[in-house]
Image (tube, rainbow, N blue to C red; front, side, top):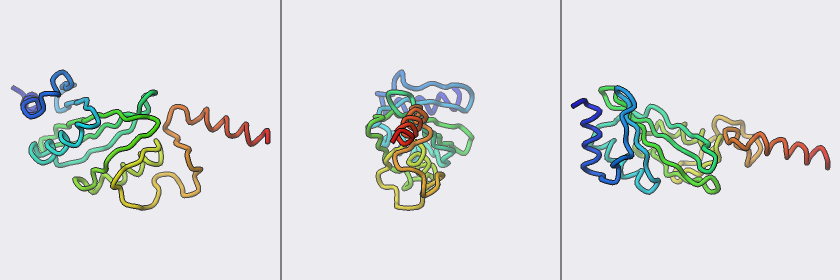
Length: 159
């Protein structure tokens, strides 16, 4: 049994609801699809019990109806566990993971600026990566952003 399969089995033993929601994409890459309400339990278990001690990245995706977020965490063997959740596009809210990884702050600020996510528990701080004078409510990684920008420009032009 490979290390990836051992990790997969360990997760299934503790979280039966993951049956059919995990896949080993290739060597050293495990992907898990989670409901938002299950994320923190699985994430905390992976970090504390399975020793996934490195936050590699946090990716945000506009998937049309929802926004998707993938947390890429790695262990010392270089195996990356990718935990993916989807949240409401209309009211996207995540909980911060800065208590586990201080380095998550920069990723979470990017999600706020670029996708319009509210990150509960994220300390007040400077915007990143957009400038302080960037227009409120404009999220450039959302698929509908260009349409909204063009609509706003047209309104301004016709006013």
